[in-house]
Image (cartoon, rainbow, N blue to C red; front, side, top):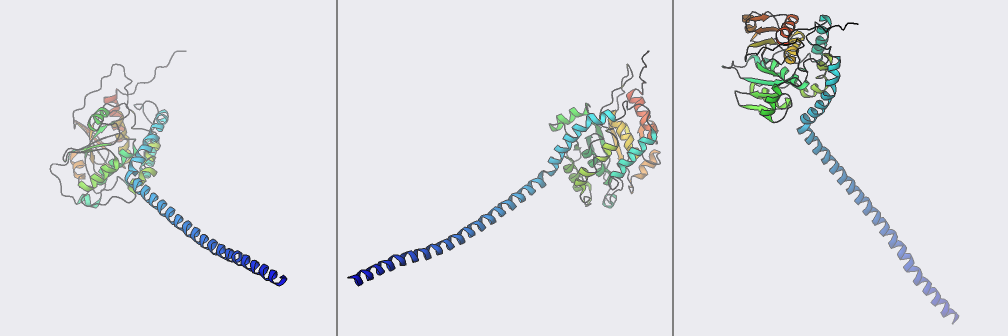
Length: 347
């Protein structure tokens, strides 16, 4: 009996031990399998997350590429709105007041240096373009201090295209035309009466000009990005000149009406002396025809035929002036009533 009891006890012990031992082994295998499954799941999740992230970044990049111009425009508009009051405060007061010539030429020169590679030389493809008769009728609503308007003017110079400028300084009357034609008051606004195209957004305008009138010329590398880096420099160097409408100080002064096409300015965008004239034309809100005759332009002959030797050269009816200082003084005297000194109060 004792031996039988011992065998039974041993048998039970073995019976109990084997399942426990097998259970431990089974649990160990399951645990290993579970770890492998978890690792695989984690790996798949990481890959999926990585893919989704890359896809999201890709989508964001595509979105940014499509909307880069709009985003930049909005940000730039906000910056310009912030700078306008500040620049007006430091812009020197009465724009008709005689200016320090050295300071004017120096700051405009720095502005030209900031954009030295743009708006000076006519592209080779443009010089080889078949002369268009009649030339295209282009209209640009803009104001001188706007970096995005400057982008379009640079392109007009590089493609050797003339354009009618309708200045839209702050509180100007031409702004109403833009609102009526396009539905919003943002600048630049471009009209090609030859093809019937009208558009906002400087990047769209530039691309359109290259496609339509570029004769196969390529857009300068990183041109649009450069506007955000150096495009602001002329506005800052010139302390906001060409941004705000000039209000005559002379009592009883009535501004003469300007017949369409009566004023012409021979220029190229990056010329430091021509800039001073464009600023005055903008502040006085005088519509004019911009005759671009940059380096290499076949139209230089028209400047010579008109009686000019270099740019800027202004034609206003029978009046012809070839010095920027004289041009600015003439414009403010005739169309702004001239400089009126402040009356000193008696002590």
